[in-house]
Amino acid sequence: MRTSRVSRETAQVVNALSSRGSNGNAPRRSLRNFAHNADVKYAQDEDEGSSDLSSLPSSASLSSASPSPPPSGRKRKRTVKTEVLSPNPSAANRNTNLLKTTKRQPAKRIKGENGRVEPPPNWEQMYSMTAEMRKKVLAPVDTMGCESLAERDRSPIDRRLQTLIALMLSSQTKDTVTAVAMKTLQENLEGGFNLAALLTVEPARLNELIAKVGFHNNKTKYIKATAEILRDKFNGDIPDTIEGLVSLPGVGPKMAYLTMSAAWGRDEGIGVDVHVHRITNLWGWHKTRNPEETRAELESWLPKDKWHEINHLLVGFGQTICLPVGRKCNECTLATEGLCPSAVIKKEVTKRVKKMEDEDGVKTEIEPVVKEEKADEDAPPLDIPLAGAGIVPDIEGMGAGIKSEEV
Image (tube, helix red, strand yellow):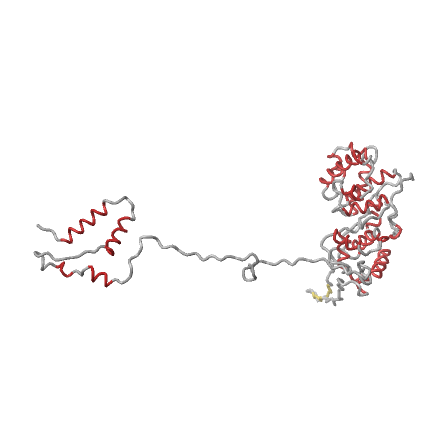
């Protein structure tokens, strides 16, 4: 029995496919190429002229009926659109969703004709009015400041050492707590509060004696290291230069300038703490970001004879009236005179009284209780005698330093 030409050609295709490799995509690719590229002519056999296969279209008719090109055997490549940003990106290339932080720029220095920095207007009036307010209110710094904590019956070298240690303990600590810690050291160190006692005391014992101050663990390490440096490099005395003081562990610029003024009687810079930095910015004297910038701004125009007293003046003012939280602007003369740009005057509010009637018909009036805010650093009663307690000191006469002669 003869087979048709279609069957023979189909067998040839199958044999061709089976002879190729084991690639799974090869048979499908070969069939696709064969269907579109093979030039097959389906002719009728003489013996099968009346077969149904004679009605199949020819390859020419198939090619004319499919005008679209055959699909390629390769996978289509996707084009990725890339955007190259220039070195100086424009506003369109910037991410507008990011939050922009506003940088606080320091105030510009206004220089006069002679090149000196012009002081703020009305600064002398504000300074004198603040001094008058300070004389009326006793602040913790007046009786428990670091300058007054050294034992007066000790030698000058011991008093200078105690002044330095008091300033080191006062960092991040209230004056009341610093005074108690200093009194504890003076009463419990063997042989008295001097350099030899600091060298011999055990760190654990020293840490126990100053446990009330802030960061006492670090301060214990700083005091022990400072004592060894004073013995080895400064002949047992504290340094008499700013460079030498700031080289001690735990001593920054503020402590160094205050130590130079209180211990050596030399005003080589302004000791700026958080109160001085905060209040002078509230007054609008400058716009600074940290105490060091404040010190540079103040030293550029403030007379040198006020470099020492301004710290004592504004620390006490910040402890009693211009508090860090809950400023008493109603009691501040600068606010009532309109000299402080940051003053907030509280308005009097009319209080409503509720009338309640009980079951017996008796009417009672209930007034709302107003909570009074206390100062942040009110001095609690202490069991230690303080020199000058109850007496407002003369601020302008302070800062003479510790003399080298024996008292």
